Amino acid sequence: MKKVILVTGASSGIGLAGATALHEAGHIVYGTTRNLAKKKDVPFKLIELDVTDDASAKAAVAQIIKAEGKIDVLVNNAGNGIAGPAYAMPVDKAKQQFEVNFFGVVRMCGAVIPEMLKNNSGIVVNISSLAGLFGLPYQSMYVASKYAVEGYTESMRMELRKTGIKIATINPGDFKTGFTGNREKIPFTVDNAALKANYDVAVASIEKDENAGADPKAIGKEMVKIVTKSSPAHQYLVGAIGQTIAVTLKKALPGGLFESLMADHYGIK
Image (cartoon, rainbow, N blue to C red; front, side, top):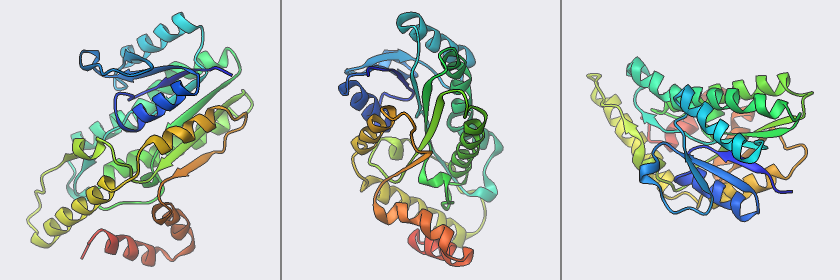
């Protein structure tokens, strides 16, 4: 059945792949971008929305409701990345990371779910990350924002379990997108050569994995499957088995051993 779907952050990467796949599956798709002046040619409807702005979120949702009468599916995809040492992260940068990755999700759910409740139906898909399930060196604020999305989603799922609204997360591993090139790297300000070397090596390793990642079309295919389900699973891990297995390893291994394996992978000495 054709559904009205809103995908945030749809001008590139996972959002573009997802919105395109959903459109090709026959749905009415509204993708969002922060700046329509930089609009790309896309097959779906592209509207302006800044997930860090209340008025922008409400205006975009109102635009879709006016045109379509409802929103059946919300895909919270918009996000960015900030790299830097957890122990020397400027608080304003931490807030900036959360404003997009976490409060953007809260803001969009607050704008869309009351509309879904009118029809006692809907699906919300929050794009989290494998990094929302285990830590990564020098990605602490990104990881923390995704952990927050996980907790928020679990709590909201309990609250809405009798309403007909279903909520799922997709936890991608590394995919080749513009996310890597857009990551903000905080200058290393601590006077410690060994830790500075760890920072450089770890970030380089993370970006190497991302640049070798799969095509985000795989996540788009997963979105298409999810929106057709009457009862989506709570969580979908999407990525190379060598990465998704880390979720199982974290549960099965002693904490110190798991941390050692992760540190070794990212070159932490």
